[in-house]
Amino acid sequence: MKYGEKISFEMRENNNVVEVSVSGIPEGINITPIDFGRDLARRMAEGVELNPAEEIDVVQGIDDEFTTGEDVKFIYREGNKSSAMILVGVLAKKVLGRDITARASEVGGISTDEKNGSYIQVALQKMAMEKDSLGGVVECSFPWDIDIDELKADFSSVLFQVIPEASAIEFGHGIKGVKESGSSLTPAPKRISVALLPERNGKVPCLATTMDVVIEAIANIVVANR
Image (tube, rainbow, N blue to C red; front, side, top):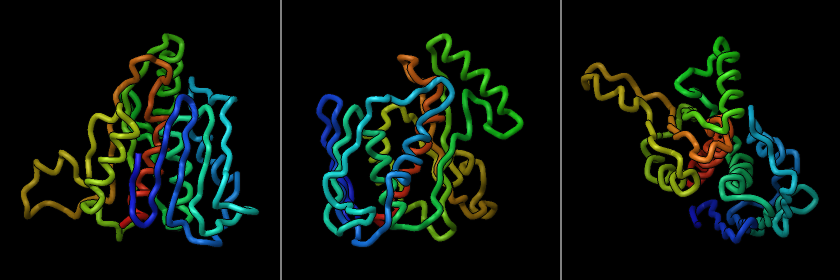
């Protein structure tokens, strides 16, 4: 898998080992294991445990917690493409220095507003016990000066290569916008929403609770290449 021009990456997956090479990262950016670990830990959710055998080696491009200007290369053992995408996303965030975030906004049709937290927890626990899964929605928010229209093609292309369970994407107004007239249509929200199907094998109670960080990574990578 390859993507990008300004900040480009290439992934090669062989069994449970993913080799990642990232080009275009400037010299002198401070980056630590905590930066990577913080985002990788976000994959953990109700009913989901991380693989303790995961091992990530930085073989080039970062020395004494600073980027060297060379291609940054990782070897990710017991990993997969979606988790490796998080590593690239962390680098893109460091380069951008922008606030581009994603979170699960719906779990099994229930809004993730704070008032629904207990309902969602019970639903996820039930799915975990039954080895079943719910669908969900991840919402990604962008700064005011980002043109969402410019991201559509690249965001969609990378997303569907990394997360095959993604079933629909809404940009800005989304499908609700078709109900408005041109004169009444307000400026589009700086938002992308991604619908994720239930996982067929039931290993993850709801992918939206673990894939939000992957979708956030994709958004940062795509914006970094504009």
